[in-house]
Image (tube, rainbow, N blue to C red):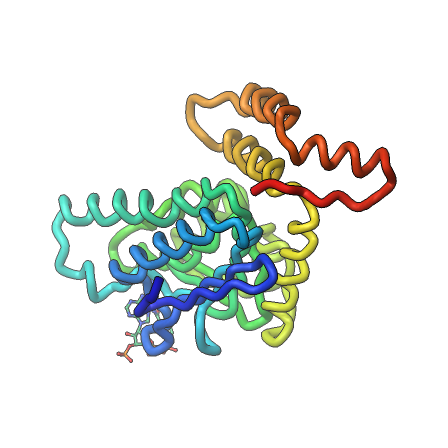
Length: 260
Ligand code: COA
């Protein structure tokens, strides 16, 4: 597939999706959200993609937010639709993807940018990263899941302060908050994400899919995460990956998992 606003490249099991509107600090307009959906969908379906890394192009930004110029004249109905459609196409979609997604936060991750990073399964950041949800400074609130995922990741009090002040935190503060898992230099950011991806790829993609589903169940209304885990655990026993994983262990060799 060819894209106007993003780049997508697959190498040795890793698909790297790069949001590519550096002159607008990679702000998420409608077209970019749709393209991201398509690229994530394509990578998720592809047997050759074991892990997805998402990052921003240029030296300044991961994503500086939703594209303000696109919604500045919206009314109530259009605003609600913007949030609903975006959540469905991108943010909830990424969170529930069965292929692991790592956000490599390489600069500003603001508003929709931080919301995208928070939808990913986990995050690594470079030292120049700055993260925040500045929406209340525009007279609006985070609408792509930020009011839900930020407190899940950093705790309610910190989320309240970040949202109310509309302030930014730097990479080390984000590390301290547990918002990102690792901080490294700008040059080492993608290599670090790839190194983690390589570790993930040694394991069963089929089991990882079940693990993502079970962990996410903890955050879904009306779903019992423990019951989900029992179901997913049981399901693993019927997979070729389970047969290969346990056989390889007993035969004292490295597993070669057939599934995705
Ligand atoms: N939506 C649309 N355009 C955006 C944008 C956004 N969220 N963020 C940045 N841009 C555009 C700017 O309008 C500018 O475009 P122009 O050159 O055509 O005027 C370009 O990206 C560069 O941004 P600029 O503001 O000049 O860079 P800066 O280094 O001075 O400031 C930021 C960087 C991130 C602090 C600033 O761009 C900003 O505050 N952006 C909006 C952040 C935000 O509120 N996001 C939440 C949206 S809900």
